[in-house]
Each structure stands twice: as C-alpha cells, then as structure tokens.
Amino acid sequence: VTAGAVESTYQTDRIDGMCDRLGIDLFAPLWQEDPRELAESMLDAGFEITIVRVAARGLDESWLGRTLDLGAIEELERLNDEYGVHILGEGGEFETIVTDGPHMDRPIRLDYETEFDGMRGTIRVTDARLADSGRELLRRCRTDERTGGMRSDDPCAALAGRSRSHREVSTLSLPPRRIAASGYVIPTMAPRW
Image (tube, rainbow, N blue to C red; front, side, top):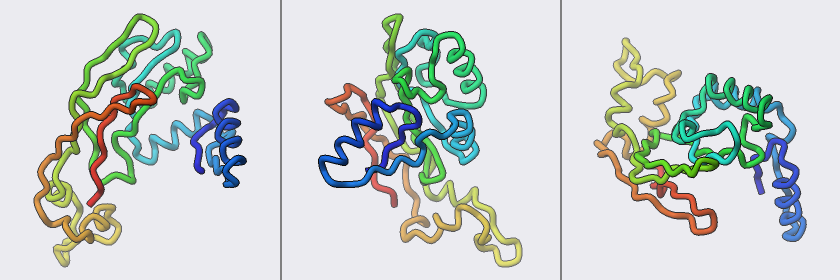
C-alpha cells in the first residue's frame, strides 16, 4: 500500500496497522520529507493543486477553490507560525485535489459552489470537465522544422503516439459523484485514452 503521509503519525500508524493485519508492505515515499521542499517540488513538477476543504483557524472561505502556489505556501507558513496550520494540511487543516499534472493528458476544470460555516468549509462540485481536446493539445506541440513532425524532446510526443490522439475529442463533462464515506463531492474520472 502506498501512503502520502508526510508527518502524520496518526495516519501512518493506522495504515501500517492495516498492512500488518493483511500481511502487506507499506510504502511511504514522502514520510519525514521537508514539507516546504515537497510543496515546491510538486509545483516545479507541474502539478496544479486545488484546495477543496478547509477546517482550521486562519483558513477562511477565500481558501476554497484556491490553487496552491508559492504565494499560498508562503501564507500557509505564516498561518503555521500563528495557528499551527501545517503547510501541506497534514493535520486535516485542508484537503486538496490535483486538477492538472505531468501524469494527466488534460487538466480538470471545476465549477463549484462553496459552503462555509465560519469555521470550516468545502466546495461542492457542480460540474467537472476535461479542458482542451486532443487535437488542440497536438496543435500546441512543437514540431521539427526540418520534417514537420513532432520533436523527440517534446512532452507531447507520447500523446501523439496514442492510437486515438489524432481524432477530435470534444470537451467531456463529468457529473459530480459523492463519496459516501467522506461526504466529498469529486468528479468522476474518465479513463485516459
């Protein structure tokens, strides 16, 4: 089992106990890494991370739907000094969803409403869709001027090799789905093509 815990012994102990009972190994590659360095490396890698739930002093409604960027990280460090808010939300201060990253063909765009009771809040996704069609992505890819083809150093080269990447793919609307155990509303994920 892979866990993304950084400093939460509560979370790691629970997952480790489950793994012991099942006779399987726990893999926690982020365990005890520096939170600021992890945050910066996620941003440097191209991840777009959206805050979907807040539950801590200092995190008001303006944080709901906010993209985690360097400015947000700096503010979270100030909130850590003032209120003890972990900059990665390790204590449950906030929850996030990755809406774009190097592992995704297209970013997810969310339409949502916010709910905030003065102490905690969440976003309720009303619509989620994949941005851009495959053809639009390919149009943005760099080409080799000599051959007119895709340059080998272009990250889009992998996309071009997919069997259906040359076809027009319309923007896909994804209905929200409630996860009963947590009460979160998240987009239903379509398979990658």
